[in-house]
Image (tube, rainbow, N blue to C red; front, top):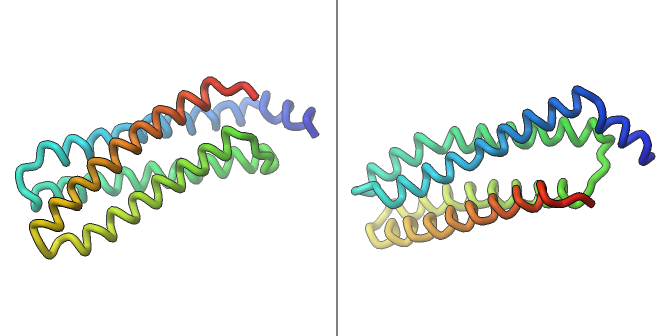
Amino acid sequence: MQDSLHTIMQNDAYMQGIFLHEIFACLFFIPYLWYLFILYRAKTFLDMNRRIYFVMPITIVLLGVGIITGGFLLAMRSFIFDVRIVVMIVVLMLFLAGEIYRMKTLKKARTSKASMQVYRRTCKIMYIAFMIIFVCTIAFIKAYRG
């Protein structure tokens, strides 16, 4: 079993798939920087929401590409998991849950100025945490040789 996994990992198509997955994973950093820039620079809540709605499809597309390419690579490995893959899946689910939470919170927060201020503060904390988690995850995946 270990020999077949080693053979798959030496395959050119598998290596190209990993390269594509890494490119889109590194691009995933950009929307969160953009979100933080919007949250700190927007002058009105309307302007903030309009800009966040502009960035949101980019985030969803990058999450989708990460799921699709990750699933493709996992299938090429015959669904053999290791610690790095489990960490990537957990972080991806955390980011997806955070985006869903943000969207649901926004629907409730639109009703008053005070709740929009709480929403903005919550989003700042969430996206700073996401940036830290993202950097730590990439560092762990690159450093782990298990």
